[in-house]
Image (cartoon, rainbow, N blue to C red):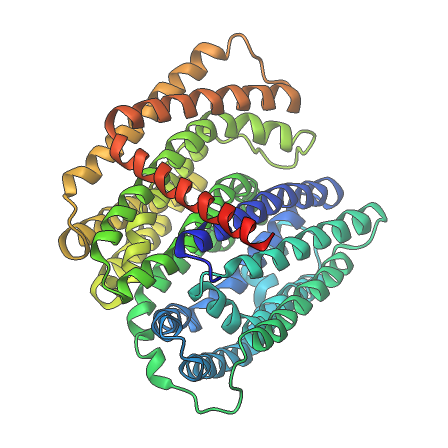
Length: 517
């Protein structure tokens, strides 16, 4: 029996939640080992290289989104030939991107030592820097050439859980390799080379699995019309690329790699939270896309209310904890690493606020992308990119880390407002003041939780991981209780609707299990 949209969404959310937990845990282990074994300079240069390599995503910007929108229709119609033709066109384009990436990889390997602070602030050699660029880039090349097309298909079909099961295995294996090789005293380039082999194998295996599972027609003509929206998607994609990469690129060019290491340590936590939240976005965009393709407007409105409640509750609970616990976390995580100052309260506060606003946009961004309204919202994407880039470039010379954080915060606030306003005006029967009231509700929850921390902190002094975990548990329990209580007071209908969806899904699973027996 085919799975319903709700069942697929819950499956995606469950598996992706496990994946993001694994990524967060493994993402804390490896950088800490690199800091202890090789120092802040190597941690900074690896973070910087990774971000510079990701800039090449601008060449494929829009293609995955346009392809996904086209696939919603062909998958809803169960048209294998149409699906195959869409994927053929997507694969052809992405393989061209992969070849261009090789050229970019060579150029970056040749010049990175000169354009970063590596040649000024460290004793890392030119050849070692170039080798790290090439090694780290191998996995990205394999992803474009072999795997990204088929990951797009799984996303459109609400079967992203298959991809993430594979990624859980790859992430754990990569971390084991790093732990073993660092403890054996291997040079950093050797450790990264073995890890790269794992990341190269992963997209090849995904390619083989999806081709077989979907019985795709390999000998068919590509459908270039499937990518007709790629230029419109480009604006949204560029906005995201700049959001992800502006800070670290500017810090690399205008500061030094040790400051990049500070940025990277804070981002272990901040970006980890965003990735956890992306579990819900990735799992639900395809469901909204399916509703949009079938013109199920009532279902869209009902489920958007549930989605909003879920996201705003997540931000209320998780960011309440983050804003008070991130500095103690960094202090413990970087203990005995003294080559640069890691405790930066102003940066921590602004960076957490920026990420909270980024997360708040998720319901509205998801609906825009599911409806394929890229052209209509692309001007906002360009303005977001401009605000982030200009403010960061101006302020980094005066305030360093804090300057780039202010640029990101301003851009995120603007774009979140623009997404919400577009949805209210054009996509769903929703009043703009309702969105503002949700933000007020969320902010009130966070304020109450911060007050609780201030009252509790004299009784729990954070001196190590044990007391940090104790404080985190207290904060999480209190923030959850406050959020649930106030949601029951002000958003009882959405809360009840979410509970009903969960009950229906569980009943279907129970019936399916009984039918098998």
